[in-house]
Amino acid sequence: MLARTNSPSSRWMDSFPNIGKATLVAPPMEAPSLNLESILASGIKEFAGNHIWNAFRQRSRIQKNLNAGVMEEAFWHEISQLLDTLGADPILLVNDATEGQALHQLRYDAQKYLPKLKMEWDDSFEPMAPYICTIEGVDVFSAGLNPGHSWLFSAQYLKLVQYPRIKDSESCLDLTFDPGENMKGTLHARFLQHLEWSDAPVFELKTPVLSHEETTEID
Image (cartoon, rainbow, N blue to C red; front, side):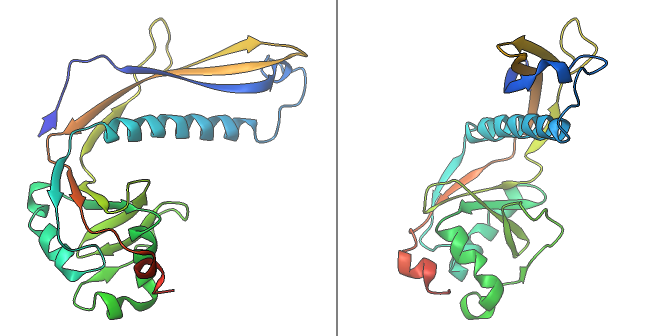
């Protein structure tokens, strides 16, 4: 089911300093940087994505304490009992510096540590994506979580992302230039962002923290 709210869309502004005014007029008074458009597009995309991540972090989570960690088969047997409550495409987020580092090494010797579990590696993810592996059908990613904490949820938990048209504009993105000195200034990008979430649960799992020796012993 979809959890809908009547709250207004969030309004955000990203700023890009030291932009030459001459490159923004039509026709341009000087040749624009070859990668200016890609820098702006990439920056706005990252900015918008960060706000989605921050909104997700603020959502409520169900706390569960587990006796086993991600490098133990018992952990995966325990969370298998939670998967039916999540919906399709389960995801596990783990700490990038401890559990994440240990799980990355399973690509070289999975049978030694988790021999009874089905392990896969999906090469369709972008090279820079924080994807680690897939264990028993659960896609595992790393994130900036606290050691010993992992989040279990469905990839379908975020149901909808919308960027409504800005009032008195035909566009969902409003660009304005704030001139400064030496014909340079700051370009501001404003947009509205509307998110809709599933009412499925998100579990925050607390497990024993891997020691430094456990994290590095596979290397």
